[in-house]
Length: 438
Image: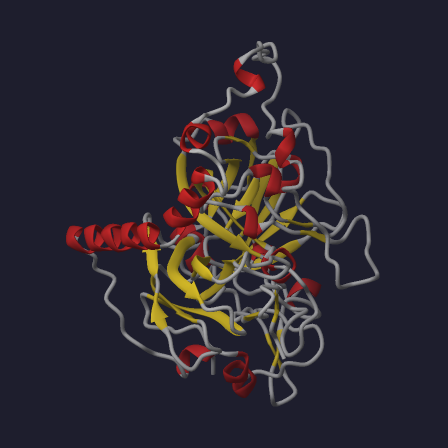
């Protein structure tokens, strides 16, 4: 039994142009009544004369030449954005240099696409240095003709691009029933989203002539020091799995699987094997260490569930979020991300009173299949203590559950993954925002 069995609420995903127009006008009125007033107060200036207040200073950048243009240099963010970076976990003390995470700063991501330099990382044996000219992807097992593909072979196929999120199954595992992490980067930062470019994995299986009658599972193995591998049902491989060599308009970076990786939309990140070197077709799964001792779910009956691949519907508020401080009572906009490994997000509700009442937030286009979706809701904070959270709904009718709901069908003990519970932030009268997991 999954949390999906307990939470069903049909929602319409249809929006008309009038809905968008009403939303725009509502937001415009919100700005007029709140944020614009604050801006006018700054422009007028306390104690200044009208002429002095209207004077606009010419900045130094208007009075001098900028730096020399060098098109041969790889573009980098402004030096004033140097604080926007990936971070390793601040919870586990036994950090390793070869097997660890580095997390995306979601609170500093203004859109649904994560820049390649901020995309979260998860490694089992460090980052290999692979020469694409020498790399080969082999396919064998229950096929008519075992084959090897060089990168040149793969690049000759017509390419396709898709926008999808990627989330580690361990995202949020430190914060089930008590607050351990302080920021949204630490609680939810094993999540990113990109445009993936490559070819359907089904094309390689078709080229090798897999046994359509008896083949049930496909093994994908990486070329890193851990030889990380996973068994994938052949139905999923043929449906939408991709062999990827580029993301966000450039070839994969080494930490993201260069020169080629597997990408499986909507499923836990560890199955999207990086540095792909081998594909083997079989009639049964391999039951590897990563499918028995790891990436399984403890259940109430003392058993462990294997192959719970899909990352179920989930959301989190990124602004305001842990570590931030509200600048006094007044008008704010609550923002965040929602996503579902089973389809599209159809609605997000937001509470500002700890779940007593909920209000539907606006979803920002585009709303895509198995992709991050931005949501926002205007809010007037009265300066009193508040507890904010979000819950998402997807097009299957699944409603994001509470941790208490999940605890009824799974055993939340030990190293528990697949955390898609509602996540709250508390706001003190002083405006400090903190992790509110109790």
